[in-house]
Figure 1 (cartoon, one colour):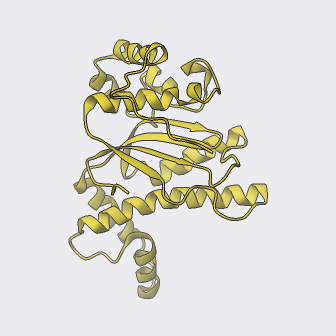
Figure 2: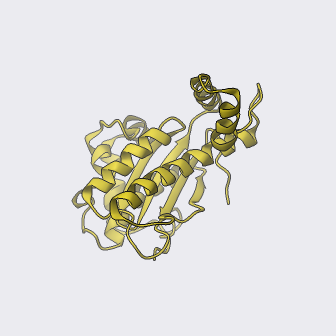
Length: 229
C-alpha cells in the first residue's frame, strides 16, 4: 500500500464492505461531504470527487509538510485543557506521540488517521440511522500516487465519468453527486477549481477533455476502472 506523503497527489478510492450501499438517501451524500470537509480539508486540497451508491473516488493533493505540521500541533494545543493522562491517550490514539520535530512516519500516521476518522465517523452515524452494526467501508482504502500532469487530468475526468461507466447516467451533468458541476461553474468551496482551470489551460480545455473521454478514452494515461462489488 502506498504511503500518504506531503505535497503529493493521489487518486483515492473506497467502497462498501460487502454488497450493500454506503449511500441510501440524498441526505447521506451531503452528510458524507460534511464529514469529508471536517477531516480531509485540513490535510489535502481536493481537485475532483464523485460519490456513488456503493463507492466513491476523490483526487487530492496532500498539503505541504509545513502546513501539516502547523495543523497537527494546533490540534495538539487545542486539547491542552485535558489532563495529562487524557492528553497522552488522545495523542497516541488520534495523532501520535509526537516530539518537537515530527517524523515522516508520524505525519503519514496522522494523514491515514484522518481518513480513518472520516470513515468511522460516517459509519457510526449511518449505523445509528439504519439500525445496522459493523464496518461499512473496506478497511484499507486504495490510494494511487498521481505523478504527472497528463495522468492527473485523466484521473479527474475518470472520476467524473465513473457514474456514466457504471450506468447511473449518460452525461456528466446528470449525476448530482460529483464535482463536475463545481468545476464547470468555476467556483466552489469543496474543489480547487481555479487551480484546476489553470492547470488545464482554461474551462474550454476541461470541457474538451471530458467530451473526449466520452468518445475515445486515452488508454495509455486513463486509469483502470476498479472492480466494485
